[in-house]
Amino acid sequence: MKRILILLLVIALAGTWAWWNSRPQPVSVTVAAVQKGIVEKTVANTRAGTVKACRRAGLTPSAGGQIALLPIKEGDKVKRGQLLLELWNEDLQAQLELARQEAASAEATAEARCIEAEQAQREAARQQKLLARKLVAEDQVDQAVSGARSANAACTGARAKAAVSRAQIGVALAMLEKTRLTAPFDGVVAEINGELSEYVTPSPVGVATAPAVDLIASHCFYLNAPIDEVDVAGVSPAQPARVTLDAFGDRRFSGQVRRVADYVLDVEKQARTVDVEVEFLDPDDIRDLVAGYSADVEIILDVRRDTLRIPSEALLEGDRVYVLQPEEQTLSLREVRTGVANWDHTEILDGIEEGELVVTSVDREGVEDGALARQEDSE
View 1: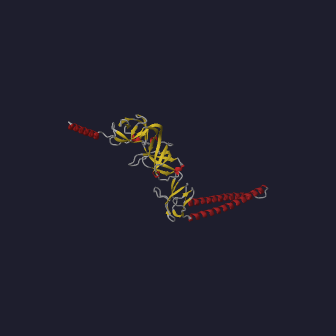
View 2: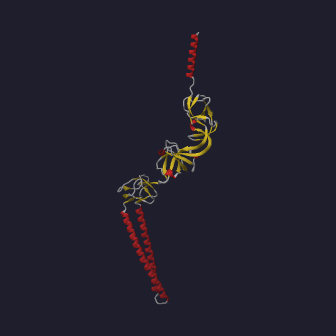
View 3: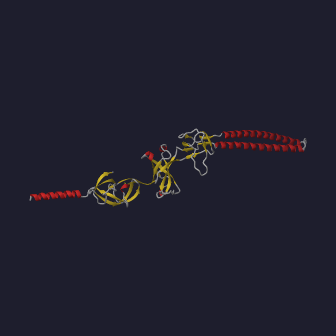
């Protein structure tokens, strides 16, 4: 009898051990509490955007020639009107000097002709007075008047010739300016393609060549980013935006939409996008920027404050979530009604209450409706 009791006890213990080992094990899940906060509806660029200078110019002299003066180097800050490059132009300077001398000669000739005209006019006036007193013949007076008119015409012609000579000075100056390259705005010299004594030529029509000087305005930058055609319908100027740059890690720059392109870019093997320009709002941020940085942008379309929200990673397809029941240690699948959403949070309009725990590790094996679960971490 005693042996039978011992045998029964061993069998019971073995059964208990087998049941214990074969029972369903609770899945470990991470959860987040449903709570109130801010939810923003945003759109983001599909490919990396680029920081661009508000003004950037590839400059080349309008005439070809040999570089005779290059007073700048890459990285120099220059002012508007400052000389950047000058070609050999001694022949043009000589032509300018010749034009000035010819203009001076023409001015002197014109002055002499006009003095003669004044003298002839006075003489004609005297002859007319004498004719009135019948002291001179009428044909003598006619000759004096004609001479005065001819002298006046000579004066007018000499003055016109002097004006032509002055205009020739302007032509010579314009030709000379073609050999000089000046800064059209304040900026930084980004690149120089050429050295002293090398030849530079303007770009032929339809053929792009490297500019002699690449000048970038360093006081104004903006971001140009491609937005998917599906998302761009809600984007408009003056909307706030957040910009992140790879060069600055997690730092965020405040911005504002300044322009939405009027056409869709159709690039082969890429999604159709619309270029959106975002300006930087903080002057201190602009001082840290360099043209060409890659960047990403979030454009804020709508903001809901003090609204019920959950992490977006907890939301399943079909607007469903797993809710952890702390007392029963089980999972239940709930349907919810959502509102505004972004990559971080989703607004909840109905289906769960504040304080409930939603599962964020939805991809783990064993996470299903009714499964045993234990909380691994809580946010």
